[in-house]
Image (cartoon, rainbow, N blue to C red; front, side, top):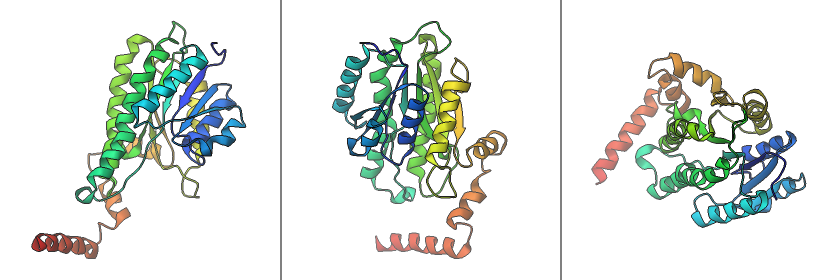
Amino acid sequence: MTSPKRSILITGCSLGGVGYALALEFAAHGMRVFATARSTGSLSTLEDKGIETFALDVTDSASIATLRDEIVRRTGGKLDMLFNNAGTMYEAPAIEADPTRTRAMFDANVFGLFDMVSTFTPLLLASASNTQTPPVIINTSSVLSRLPFAFSAAYNASKAAVATYSDTLRIELDPLGIKVVTVFMGEVATNLMSQKPEDFAKQIVEEVVVKSPRYGQGEHLWKGSNAVLVWFLNAIGWRKVFDSTVKKTVGLDQEKIRKSIFDKGQASVKLE
């Protein structure tokens, strides 16, 4: 039986995170929300709010297929929005990063997103019409796709991959009647120096549902702490505009630290 409400599937909705806050906010705007996480244990409070919850591992094709079948059963084969929020972060110096952990991160952040898009696009196509409110795919990138933050090169690269993929997907799906939105997320956390997940979710949902629901509107959203500043400097600045700030943040502007790193590198060569 097809739901009269517009529906949205959100990945990565574990308690306390951005996806959890997004699920609550979309539901508050009258949407039928399908919230997912690797473990449904942290989703019980969403169920209390009338949100439908499911287990999903975006790195597992069988898990994705099982969820697709269940969404089809519940909606009659249609979906109005897909919000690819799931992901993980692994930080390490680029030349010291563990290859296994790096590949696992790309599986979650990039290839899992690719698979979600491929699997659920047919459901979005089933919701496409000539109305001004098209079905939407929302992909979560990061300001670090444009800002070379040190010691997280692989993570930055995964989010740059999402941004490039999403922008190209936007062009390819336009003739099919599907809108694609890329979210460049700034710092979002629960401490006082970062934007809270609830505030971030309110801003995103306000843009997607209220302010910019039509084609050609709100296709690139910069939200979260310092996101607009990064957008502005990236748009008008030179290629190395962020270098001095990044170096200062991690101490790479200090000669003592730089010498220590150099000496460590030389010692590693001599040990070989």
